[in-house]
Amino acid sequence: MRRTTLKFRILVALVLIVSVTSLMFAGGVLLIKARLEASIFGDMVAEQMQVLIRQLDEGTYNDDALFTGWTFHFGEGVAALPEAITGLAPGSHHSVVVGDLRYQIEAGAWNGRPAYLMYDVTEWEQQEHDVLLMLLYGLLLVLVVAILMGMSATRAILAPVQNLSRRLTMIDPGQTSLRIAGDYAGTEIGQIAASFDKYQERLEKFVERERSFTAAASHELRTPLAVMMGALDVLGASTQTPSSQRALERISRACGEMLAFIEATLLLSREESSQIDQSSPADVEQLVERCLEDQSARIADHGLQIVRDYAGAPVLHQPASLVQITISNLLRNAVEHTRAGRIEIVLRENLLAIRDTGEGIPADKLALVFERSYTTKQSGTGLGLNLVRRICDRMHWQITLESAPGEGTLATVRFRD
Image 1 (cartoon, rainbow, N blue to C red):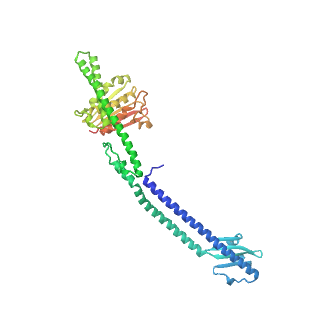
Image 2: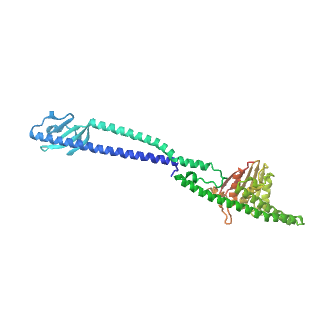
Image 3: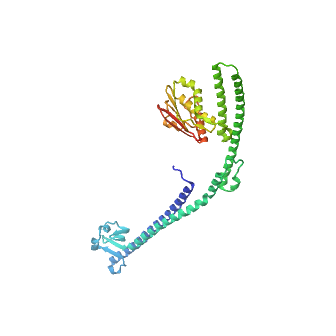
């Protein structure tokens, strides 16, 4: 069912109530009128028919004694009547059309032969049509008045709701301990306001728990990472073989990425840009190469060819941790879903594009890939692309995915510095 506004539904309901009531009243009036008319005219003509038959029997009948608009046909005079009259069954018949005239006809018999008494009701029928026309105009006028009154009534009915809506719109998300039920006490809107206050209270408690957890997790994770990075510095200072030195560098870089991830999640959960150090610019090309190095073992295992098309070197004055998380997740997805194929990385002044020749994504699943917890891998969590989308939304970057099964996927990020 198509959604409509509350104002429209109230207006329609009021108009329908008034219209149906008016139609029922008009229909009742017409029904009563028709029955009264048929009864009065029928009884009158039937009684007059009996009088005329009695006069014929007594031999006192005189045509000149008939009232104006009345005609009596019997005996030989019946032959001149049209079939519309002679075909009538015995009894009363209302509004029989003969030419341009309408008659109330009483069909009877005299001396075993048909007899018809006709009363011209054309003028009455014309008045009835005029009344019906006036009644129709009256219904249309009532409908217009109902619409105007309904519009006025809906404004009055919805005024408290609109007032509550404006009040809720003006609430700053940062306001706490705000309660509005007292302003609407004793009204139906007060129930809605009280429900909102309960929801607001639960939401504030939830946000407080989330903030406490985020702060505690940040502190507890940063401390062991700082210890690990300090120990790596000590190990790196001692004499190491080239392979050991590379391993220590990768461990150190992984610790740095974990710190960056913690800072990124703090930014996304608190919406506070001050949580991220933005003092140094982010070199996108350098971050791409670093991510390729981290994925080098899996790239070799999958037999992938890496094609670089660096026609630009984007340098963003934005958190390098967020840029790195975005690149890492997109590149990791391309590597994981491509076997014995090619991955092309395109860099322009404000654009990063990663195209693979992997398995691709069906059209019905493409819109779901950014949803939280959606994944096609048995051991996956579905958080990677969701995190990418949240970062892009937070930093006002534009991300698009184009894919077709069996043809691969193209992920494009347009940066906004």
